[in-house]
Image (tube, rainbow, N blue to C red; front, side, top):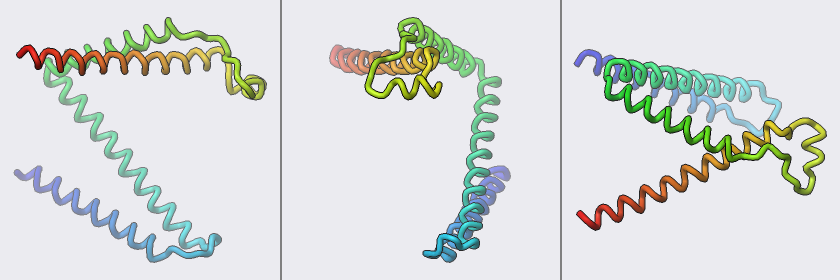
Length: 151
C-alpha cells in the first residue's frame, strides 16, 4: 500500500507541475513573435514534455525487462515475437528489390543522394513487411470468425 500511495502522490505532483506550466504558457501568449518571454515558456514546456517522455520510456522499458526476466513464460513469448518479427523482416527483405523506381522527378533525389539502391531496398522491405502483416491480420480475423461459427 505504501508504494501505491507514493506513486499516487508522485503522479499528482507531475500533473500539478504540468498544469502550472501550461497555464503559465497560456498567460504569456502574445501576438508579438519576437516576445522572448513567450519563447522561453514554449521552450520550458517542450523541455518538460521531453523529460516526461524520456522518463516514461525508461520506466516502461525497465519494468518490461524486469517482468520478462522474472517470468519465464513472458520471456518465451517475447522471444517468439522477436523471432516472428525477424522472419517477417527477413522475408520482406528477400522479396524487396533494390532498383531505383522510375517516376517523375526521381533524378533530383538520386542526384542529391537521398535515394540510393540501399534506401530503395529498405523502402521496399518496409512496404512488403506491411503487406505481409496486413495479410496475416486478415487471415487471423477470418480464421477467428470461421472457428467461432463451428464452436
